[in-house]
Image (cartoon, rainbow, N blue to C red; front, side, top):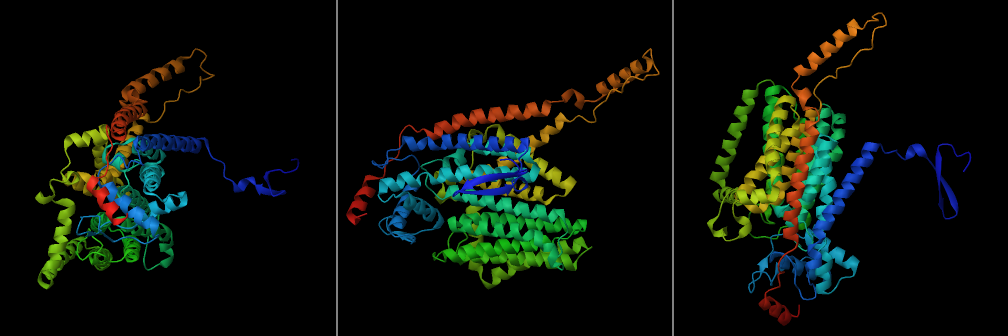
Length: 547
């Protein structure tokens, strides 16, 4: 239309709406490339994860997966018939006595909501519709991991991380493919979203000094801290196992406070961030409620409430120590050590059972139990399983963790320290119990992308050598010949000059090798030789109970 200038128009209900072009931001070529690559990752990941869905015979109750999926199908079926009530006691679990459930209501709640929106009411239809939920969670992980990598090491690392997480095999792929209806997929999603927002809060705190005596300085942390707390609260409503990330926060905060004490830096931002995490987690637990008589960090008892209250109190204690011992780091270390000894001693004297319960809970995450050895997912992580799941990515991940430590030592960026603690804790837990591989897959991918993003530095050998223009006062070209000789001499001196382009080649080669092996592994997992059917006795019990 003539005379519109910098405006565009839309026809809506026979009315012309004008919008200034400046309101709609123009995407650069780089952003378009990033968006297209992410969309390609999403499409490929969706294709891989939907393969099992076409192998299942839902009317015959034949599905691909371990027996745990039947627990969740049962919970979803009950919730669909009586939405949104959750069946905390299930007579079909641990039959015939029944069992108080230890997993949260959010997974069946979301699955039953999808079923209700899709009009699924019969068991076969409920199974068919809800089977898509883990695949959707796996797809949602791609942009989350991209932003994680971008936050830590730039957009190139984000792209590499997104590609890796789309193809990575093993427990991660198994838990995020269609048909494996379990709480693990949402555990992965909400724990990763929590780490994203926590790292975002740390990034904002590193951009300016945070002082609790100046409320205005706290504003940049409010949004990311609140989102981190909400993410942790949602994760705790999925499964109390996410308290493992609360432990990561405790360890990171303690190390960061010690580092800042020796380097004369303020740690006020950690008090605000951890307070938001504790508050959000307690709110999520309060929404779920206390349903287990067993006092343990891995159940919906009072223990998780006490743990997040302890997280805030511990951070507050560290903040008080840092303020009273500023400029005296060894005093801070002395108070820290004395406090740990005093807390353990008081707990042992006042309530030994409480201390024993907490020690048992930590043993559940990081120890071995001979009684649990027959359970496949509780066995230690083997080298063969490690290589089958990650191939060269595990090597790159270990290199990335070492680079996190080196980068933090040089740059003192809190994001590197948190990522390092995140990786060490989850790798140790995975070595003890292979089931935590679906947790550690994310940080292994992030660390590997950080290592490959660092490899791009090989493409930058140094300052470019510019050949000066020919001097007009030198008609015979004597000065030009001398300059050319000097340039050739300087070019041969640099070792990195011979490596120009090596970084990009190395990154592409590693990505091709990883994706190739991972696709083969993913296909072997997604297309089984035979599907599982429910125990005939379980079907008979359901018929007798009218289920």
